[in-house]
Image (cartoon, rainbow, N blue to C red; front, side, top):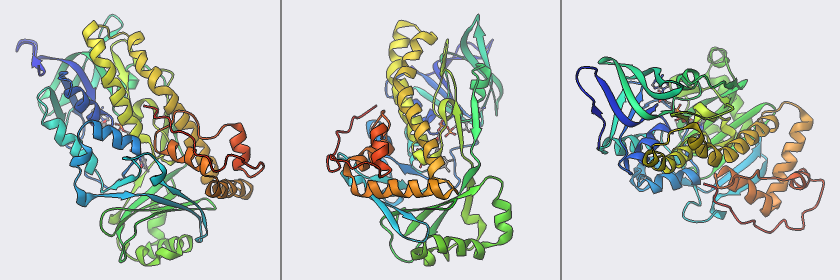
Length: 434
Ligand SMILES: Cc1cc2nc3c(=O)[nH]c(=O)nc-3n(C[C@H](O)[C@H](O)[C@H](O)COP(=O)(O)OP(=O)(O)OC[C@H]3O[C@@H](n4cnc5c(N)ncnc54)[C@H](O)[C@@H]3O)c2cc1C
């Protein structure tokens, strides 16, 4: 049954679940709930689905979610690209390590690079076909409705003015600066990293089929092939430095990139205007709880992480699936208490916490300007290149298939090159974590 107005007198809408934010997590949750016939309203303050430039890499766990929802096979072939090989190189060109997604279990033994927003648009199109979901753009969350200490709905501001929606469960999927989290009075440690990313998509003259990731003295430049001859470029820059970079001009930037990745000089020449670029800040959110009586936080609202993990959006999607598995039982038992919803957090927190920590370790080693730390980092990459066991543990973590950290204490010593590994050629089983 779809959401309905309870009566024209009070103009209060009723639904089972109301989701704030139709982003990476909220849209997937809406679709997953719709597939179970659960009446859902999703609102988003944006005027429509996003249209700007952003990086899009679908890791194997994200591919599995989309497959489960019937979206993966509907992605347009001319907007996606499967990539197997990722080469990590020192700035200047020397290869340190190559990771092959083909080592992972089929069918998700690849990364999928898509053109901006392609996945999101496919999910939104699928949501819009569902009778039990109402998706409302241009509508902002303005506050919670409460009865005693329980959340029983929310108020909104949209094109038709203010509105109230009564719901059994309110989901805050409204990103790192979540207003739902604020209204729930859930304290949050919101940290903005000192570095963000300049992103661009450039058209190469020659086909590029493998990914390259260059790491140097406070320098990171990633090049990922997209459809046709298009290549995504991620370049780490200090936050607040975009204007100064523009002042120095495009030739200066091209020269820097050419020193980092000399084999792509021709590609860098294709940057002719700053409108081909965008800046993306990076942040981390940590909260002591993701649930309250009648409310849940998912995705970046609960646990934004540094993009080194390459899992932020995947984790929002996996949250959505875990919550959509739990909610039918809550609705059947009419139990929307924090204690019941905590099951969602119990299932999801181990992987999220592990990935947040791992991403922060990567920030420490990868973004460094300290030569000793950089030396250790490069040694770890070189060990990984020779050690199939450790390489697989790293790959399956980035692929979203592990809840355990990739290295235990002994693995760390081995990775740093201080101990030989008698099991270097073994490949550990890959626990599908979610
Ligand atoms: C440089 C960079 C690269 C990244 N690369 C990757 C990657 O390769 N792989 C990956 O998995 N992740 C990546 N991410 C992370 C990823 O983009 C996020 O983790 C993901 O979008 C989180 O999804 P979400 O649904 O929680 O939040 P969002 O996608 O941010 O969605 C939140 C939605 O809530 C809406 N909203 C906010 N406030 C309100 C309000 N008051 N009322 C109504 N609506 C509201 C917003 O309009 C938005 O649509 C990257 C991030 C950065 C910065």
